[in-house]
Image 1 (spheres, helix red, strand yellow):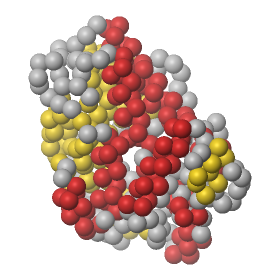
Image 2 (image 1 turned 90 degrees about the vertical axis):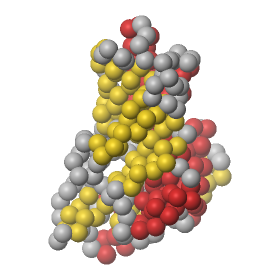
Image 3 (image 1 turned 180 degrees about the horizontal axis):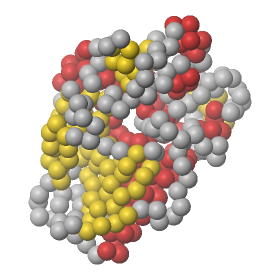
Image 4 (image 1 turned 135 degrees about the vertical axis):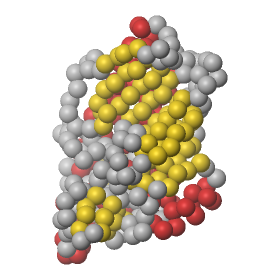
Length: 306
């Protein structure tokens, strides 16, 4: 998933729930990220059920698709050693979506590019890999090397999949949808590590206020977005980067070259109908480098570039 630390196993019910004057606040950790659920005033029992279900949804998706776990679908795929694997519908849908993003980005986005982490470690250090280190990995990067005919998937030996670029946004949409099923019409916000979705407007007509994080100070907001319905997703290098001789290397890699995208914004935030849509646009924009704004303007969405 979209994290730089191994996922940990969670025990059922591992979340907190507190009440403010205008909403319930549930908190838990998933995908190595702090996560929140804000719920309109309702009974404590219903609020607790919603938070437990949202957290359970996030943990299920984390367990299923994390490359850090030996019981995940991704682990089974990545250790298949060239053998064909039959995948379930949920996995197949994500593979189809990933293939579409690869096409739209002209190969700059690629779910097989996770192996480049063997060369790059975006921990704020000054370590930049050599071209030879990157070249040694590019031979096992490329969706064009994958045999995918739903539901059959075959990777060449040594290749791996990593859903880190799409998994968290997918989890947000799945979680907010399941919350809607539990309490139709009740307004709540699902926030998984800064990716946010809202399905229903608040009963009094007011909006939820969501901060757009500034690139200058982690956790600080550069602006506030009012959300009645829809989603926000952000892509940027506030926390994950390499700094060498005054040059900042973003963790967003061009899969065709194995190098960070040149002249990309520090951060892109997009508002869209779903978190998956918003996340796709932030990724596609960042991969355009200096042309990020141009892509977003043509997409006719609200966006914030820093």
